[in-house]
Image 1 (tube, rainbow, N blue to C red):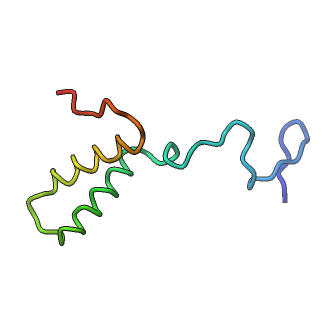
Image 2: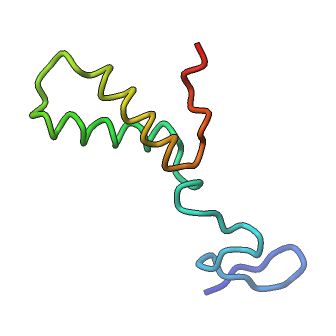
Image 3: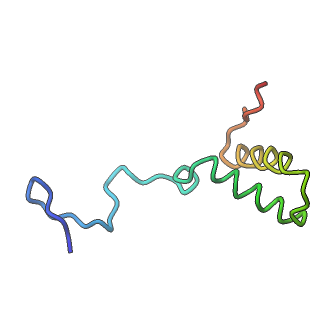
Length: 76
């Protein structure tokens, strides 16, 4: 069933409002994308300890490339 708004119009909660659609990558926080990519990198190496930071930095670079951000985050 729809919900009545203050103007008395009915709107369903299942339909996105116009102008609110974003790409899938933009809808997911950048840090979550990096976290998941780093997890899969660790999984590929058998979760051996000692390379966690390398996994994170590699994942961060991968996500930056995926999002089309050529500048990256390594502006140290």
